[in-house]
Length: 268
Ligand SMILES: CCc1c(F)c(F)c(S(N)(=O)=O)c(F)c1F
Ligand SMILES: [Zn+2]
Image (cartoon, rainbow, N blue to C red; front, side, top):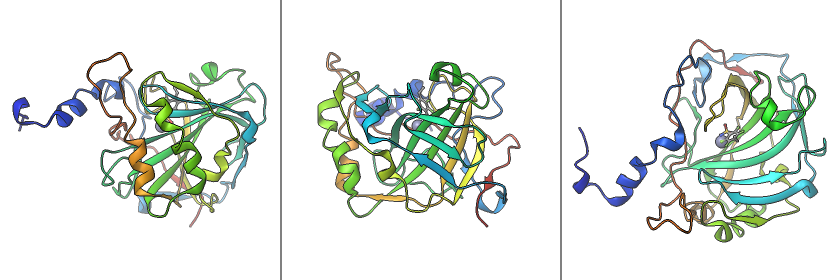
């Protein structure tokens, strides 16, 4: 049933005008694309999976900016100051940025799902393999180049650590706006339990969609308030110069075929 454009609300039309940001829905030859639905009863417990070890230095936080897809907090990744080790990985990975994906309502917004359960938002902490590569740009092209931690957000009590981030968002409402942001510990956004996670080999969920990501999706979610999520939705996809302002919502990619991949769990 096509939508008669005149009958659609402007928001519907606008969100339909944004398939491009997700890149091609299916990447030619792509057999390890992300995101996916995690079918819990089909995940395989692997006792060799280690707990995640994160060592984040809040002083390596540099800026927060709106890249027209999401807002991201970038870290100085010229040294091994903020790192991720353990999990399924053999190597050490450097934190380069974190960002979120969310919906226009609390009913949806996450990229991954657990037994088809949608969450209102999902946090991604992006790291690259600094044992094997010297730049993010190199690592992003390699099979074992990136490691991304995914954390589901649920609406509940206000997240005190997130509030510092939320307070900075009005300053980066438009695409390409940047504001200096320092001393933020991304560890405060992790759930208390980071030992229980699912892991699988996948891709970036935004262009260039390269199949270089080891995903670790946390079983435990974090809680943020409705008001905090509403500030995420006050961001815009569009730059200050554009006359049609488009609210930054539904910035998630559609789910991709599993193509026979195994999803392992670190817990029974
Ligand atoms: C090119 C920079 C970048 C992203 F924009 C991004 F959205 C993701 S994602 N959603 O897969 O975590 C990355 F991993 C990533 F490296
Ligand atoms: Zn992401």
